[in-house]
Amino acid sequence: YKYIVHSPPREDSPVQTRTAPGHVHFASLPGMWDRTITVSSAGKTFSATGWQVGWCVGPTRLISPIHRLLPYVQFCASTVVQEALARALPRADEPYEGHASYYDYLNDKYRRKRDLLSGALEEAGFAVPDYGRTAGGGFFIFARITPELRGAIPAERFGDEYRLNPAAPGGVAGLDWTLCQWMAEERGVLCIPSGPFYSTERAAGGAGEEFIRVAFCKTDETILRAARALKGVLGRGDYDVEEDIGGDAAVEEDSETKKVVAAVGGSG
Image 1 (cartoon, rainbow, N blue to C red):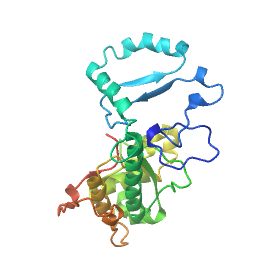
Image 2 (image 1 turned 180 degrees about the horizontal axis):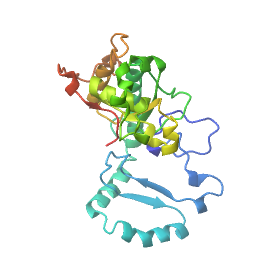
Image 3 (image 1 turned 180 degrees about the vertical axis):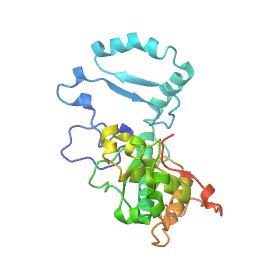
Image 4 (image 1 turned 90 degrees about the horizontal axis):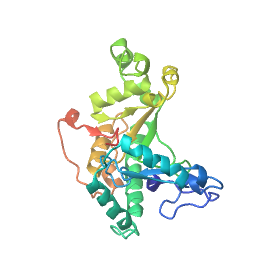
């Protein structure tokens, strides 16, 4: 995720990496090199989560035990995938699609997608982070369910028919699960409840149930379709999402709204 940091770095931040402004390598902090193993992979950076090839960087005394253990964990990594990654890494530093490097392109692309989906979420009644002030990275938005949006959920959705859900923490669907199920069935938009990101005890106490997680590592068309599905949840009128991206993306008309499932909940 270090190449997908899209908030402005603090002026008083320690020395940062050249290709990832806003990110500080933990190992670069005073006295931390000899105590840190930096683990990374190609999965998020190159949108290749199925490759399962990565690397560790650190002092010899920490890396050597990993060498001994690895054959018992992943006996034989794909040679083809390793070669592909070895070729991709140096090329990523070269100019790409009008940007100084692939990493600059990646950051700009995700920043634009983040803003596109954030606007649609706000229009639908969610509260989203102010990325000009708060930390931002990766390709997920943790959106807050506002009281206004909660009031838009039909009352029957809070009855036992929906509330008792064996998949939810403790077998009881909180606000986050209730809204996500409602959005999937009535708006055709898949989001992720935040409850599973908390311990069972904290989730049972209601921690995080006012949040959902949505992903913007999607095509522009998918985000557009999600925005169209979100439009009008609170009866606020149209959300001009096409104007947000300059009208370059084609919007597919589909009269069967409930079959347009814009999966913005996971990363794939």
